[in-house]
Amino acid sequence: MRIGTIFGIDIVVSLSWLFIFAFVAWALATVGPFQAMNLTPLARIGLGVLTALCFFASVLIHELAHSLVARRRGIPIKRITLFMFGGVSNLEGEPSTAPVEAWIAFVGPLTSIVLGFVFLLISIAVRPTNALGLAAQYLAWANVLLGVFNLLPAFPLDGGRVLHALVWRVTKSRYRATQIAATIGKVVAWLFVAYGGFVALSDPKSAFSGLWLVFIGWFLLQAGGAERMHAELEHALAGLTAKDIAEPPPQALSADATADAALQLMMKTGHRAFPVMLGEQLLGILSMSDFAKLGDRAPAQAYVTSLMTRTDDLKRVSPSTDANEVLRLLSSTGLGQIPVMDDAGSLVGFVTRENVLRRLPLRRELERVAPKHAA
Ligand SMILES: [Zn+2]
Image (cartoon, rainbow, N blue to C red; front, side, top):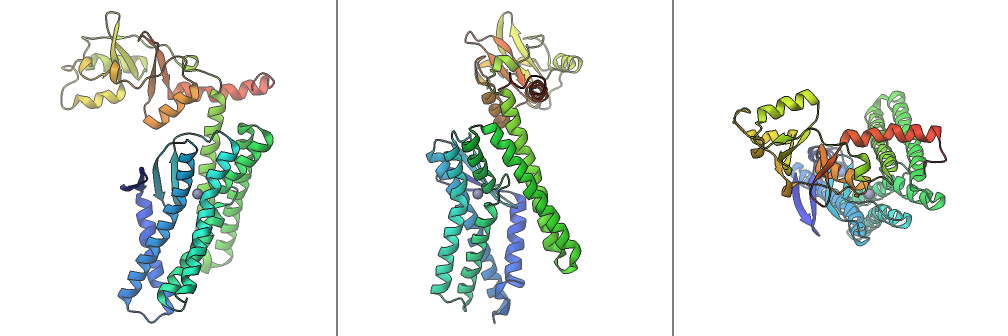
């Protein structure tokens, strides 16, 4: 759900975020710091919502700090997503050097800690004994905690990225850095799980906070694993081009074929995309997702030319496109395959998700058999 745009960056909140927001506001209003004060229930709820809003604005400012620094270093950014565990800045590229990566990652926690001190000064200025002062004091703590927590050296926390940049700088290998940082991150995540489990089991009263820590640890394990997988894939594709990983196009459909015939061909051959040809000329490509355009027409009554994506509208790459660029395109567009076309406009083949994933075990195997040849 998009709630607005700041500096040309879309701000998106997930459903889990709304849930957590309501929970924080409720907790602040009922069991939080205002409990001891002599306030009407309405005032307490108002204070709870206001404080929760300020806290989530703080999370947003933390993410904006990452995003703006990334953009200044030439990495485009379209979206910030707020969800259960905080926020994510969706960078549309990778930092080119270790210092750039370190700075983009570090500026977030730094911003949170600075915000913490700002709220502390506010709370001192309005005196912590009154309700607004108390709210500012709570926000000061929350921001400092957010900053410190994010500095933990576990992917995908900012600290994990700072660590990655440091190892990258020392080893001069980005891939090696990912392996080392991911391993350390795994240890930190398991410490969360173990400590959370211990807290939950040893004292029934703190079972909830214990389980919460286990949950955070589990989340870090999942996210760290995905990050590592992505790095391995990038490494496996390094130095390859679209032509290297493409598979040759399957038998073409003729322009007068019906959707019904195309469906049968898909089922028979297992291919998900077919070129549509008129003689020697490529008109377009018919892929599985194009069948959504059928509407309420019967497949036997619709021609493939009315469903296909025309050559001019195709997202495509040239044979010499970097394989990692194709991978980025596959994940950013959500497409199942990308056609590879040469300058003359003829179809060289398709790169599918399966083509890409197949490279992964191959590279691993090669490095075990002949480690010297695989860089
Ligand atoms: Zn951050």
